[in-house]
Image 1 (spheres, rainbow, N blue to C red):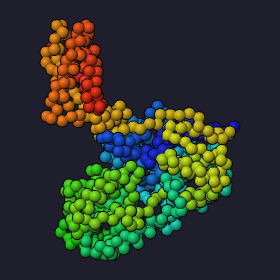
Image 2 (image 1 turned 90 degrees about the vertical axis):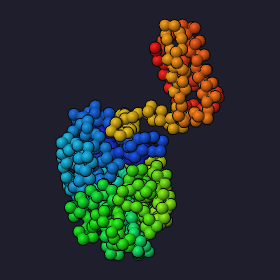
Image 3 (image 1 turned 60 degrees about the vertical axis):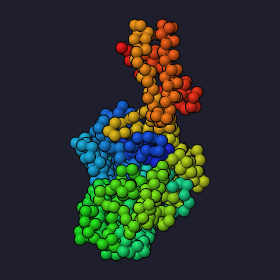
Length: 554
């Protein structure tokens, strides 16, 4: 009887982001990605969202390392937080590790890890785990699918991928090697990217964007061009630079991550922009508009990004003018639509012409669509299949796709969620347990602000706050000062003095009655004040602001 293998999902199954999973072989743990997620609109004040690391903290001594499949924040952005709590080596392509190093170095945690590069087709033993790194195409260069050769057979994780037959760098998804795995001992379990499982057809090749960009540069000759894209999208940056050079423009980068990533990719030979074509952002104001191309961060409308600050006329390096064309070479991540729309609106108000994915094909997805997903399934023909990476509806659509093809038995297709722990043994695959896998909210440098804090912030945002201050003499049962009613967001105090006076009187009577009944405990008096003020506020205005009682003893 072969030793069972466990696969634990800590994030990425039910949302776009927070991708993190554990592979357990012979009692040792290997992490697969440690990502983050950007906050949704109702996560007030939250900067980012991480996986719940409780399971990893509880089993830290069993962790042999982390594999990072590619250099996107939703797969590696959590490293700078997890490394504060535990130490482990990190495996990935040279580019992925270079991008990760920037983040880890910013957090001052490079001494907590060792960055170990792996290469296309390499097979490496990490602890008791035999891991193979298979090239795949994606929107960031040098991504990997990962094959785990285990006592229970081969487990193949696709990583983020698409089947781009004409990639910018010529590095194809290695379907030959995947086919060899399938036709050899076979693939026991396939876990595959579900992001575009609802989308029919094929994802456009990244090289198709080059022609669109070239045409846009032709149409906007004489105008300054600002293009926003992901800083990690080195292939897109290359095509933007190629179009700029074709029309005699100089290229400048804007945004710290864009500047760092362009420097890194050029040093590694992954980005070909000649020295004479690059200028500092400080120098673009001295060049004619038709000779300038600025490649900027902020394509997702992030509030403090370079592009968002431009839209608010707040960017210290660049001021948008009426002879500018701004191109958003991206598509909004689910949840970011409103932020992107706000930035576009701000740019248009400043007189710029804005081109985005809604009006031109300026973006190609890095994720496989239905026909590509079906191609992978038909090649792998796994014994078991689990859709991963996406919102729940994406994974259900992917599962339906697999069942419809008949390459996997319907009963062997499992749709899982964050926290599920799968066991693969001689009897098959099943969900054996669940582990903590909720959201860990980060606000500033403080982790886990908690659901209670978010709930309070929503109440404050929607209903406001009422503070009632009263000073009492417990010995005599007398009210010495107050009650004073202070409010923000409930009513506008200068225009509602009679209402505040009524509220004060209601609280005064409630406190007096409490004294008559013998209630002199400060904590009990606070409850009386909260109850009386809350009742009055609700009955008089039908609102439910936060009530904060402050009872002081003289």
